[in-house]
Figure 1: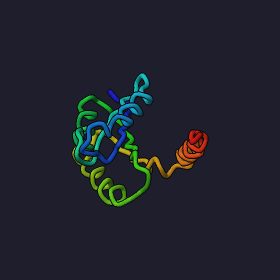
Figure 2: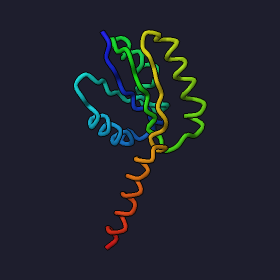
Figure 3: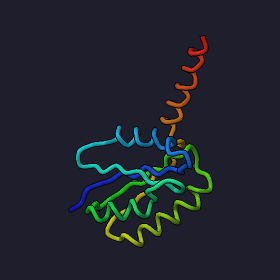
Amino acid sequence: MGGKALILFAHGARDARWREPFDRLAAMLARPGLEVRLAFLELIQPDLPSTVAALAAAGIAQATVVPVFFGQGGHLRKDLPELIARCQAEQPGLALRCAGAVGEDEGVLAAIAAYCLAQLDQQG
């Protein structure tokens, strides 16, 4: 077996509609031979441990967790490393790697800045 996966990790919210952009992002990332899954810190399922367990059960060998957060706050500095360590201990056959927060990337920030500036033209 084998294969790779991306796990888009987000905070979660009480309003189920909050996850819609994450579902769209996951769909945009779909590729043959690549599993793309969502996982949430709280309030929405699935959580990270169950997502990692499902990937391991599917025979995935490597997964990269991509925190879809704007910055590296306490959840990413403390909670996520603990979750990754727990998941790795529970699923030793699946190699986990964690990327930095999406919002820390210069390309992402440039895209957000371009969006913000484009809104000036929408004012009329």
